Image (cartoon, rainbow, N blue to C red; front, side, top):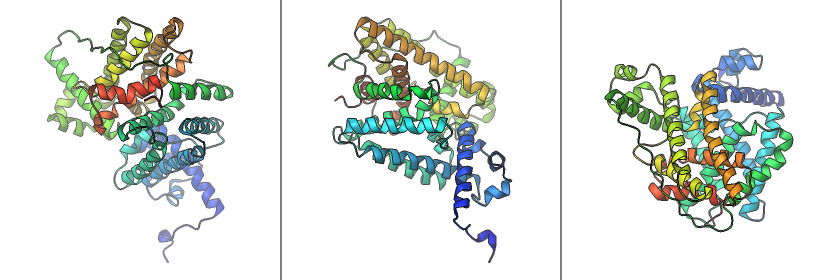
Length: 405
């Protein structure tokens, strides 16, 4: 019998080596994405030659699938354990504690890293459907936290908000010592479960209209059209799935026309981020000029940003594209993201000082809020809502608590 067609014997040694390959590949996958990961790089990281890795995974795509499925399985174990708690709030509390403990063990190198799920969209069929089916099953399992109290759209939005917090938390948790995780976990849960408001308040945010820029030239308008098209495609297909050909085809222009307006794809993505950050900062500034309390201004900013996501000018570029950028560019984009979060943090701190916002951790609250507003870009894809309904689905739960009616 041909040994190349014979499945490898399942032994402890084989299983350990396979897990080591998946762990190494996950780290590379998170840094370079599906298309940037190579079997040669994975092999070198575990002191093997490339042909030895193909003994375990014939193709790079097979290895990427194994990375995603392994991480999904680990999250599934967390929610399964949390489902034993007595009520939805306690289940959420347990889920967050278990997630933070897993993150702690990853940072201590006691466990393999978790895959960043945003790059699932870079997989081709049938691999993408295989991973997406597993992820959707996990999503439905987490949704059980909210299904008894909310309709399907509201439960879906809250599940999306919660999972977005878990995926994004690895980016801001690294700013803290692991010895502080217990304290951080309690603050994390308190904000998600109870929101930011003092006492019982109505959801009635003032509408903040996006400040219009002065008239621009035809060339600048044409470039903005490219930026919106690229943003939508990257959000839908991932950074590497949104090719120059696809962007040009959506706009019905040639590749030559694309490069007339954009020097390279990385430059275009940076420009998309710059546009998104500029819009966010302008809306924050507009909200800060509104009359009322800091709580009312914060609600106005959050509602306006979610409404922008489903407007003709939206959406904003998802932060999942950051991980696919070259490292020197990636850090600058993260710095800009943190500056937007820091402005929310300042608004929250001022609200705490004046008494319109509960005494909470303003830095963590700002990260959670910003991640939720980022996640709301998916409303356009899912077609769940528009306008004010979109703000009710996404801005209201993060500001008033995931269990607020």
